[in-house]
Length: 117
Image (cartoon, rainbow, N blue to C red; front, side):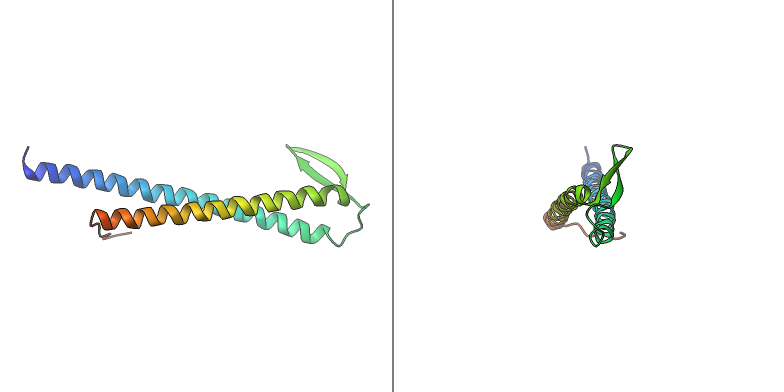
């Protein structure tokens, strides 16, 4: 094989690796957006239900089924879900930052300069 063919093959491998990094980062960013939106919805519902009387009737969607509950029944479960979403969001952000750092390290190691992003 000539040097040019090896170089082209190496360049193709680097391009594929770069694309994989970018795709992974984009997928994580999409998940972060989805979880942020869901957490915001939970926050809005919590803010709405908190001032209401504890015995007031409310409805909660559980696995696609609308269930009648009281505010006092729903608030603890909703708060638990909101806390869980916050933890998931924090984990996803850490995962994104770690992957971003890996990409930067990889770019330095392979002397990659991005021409177009």
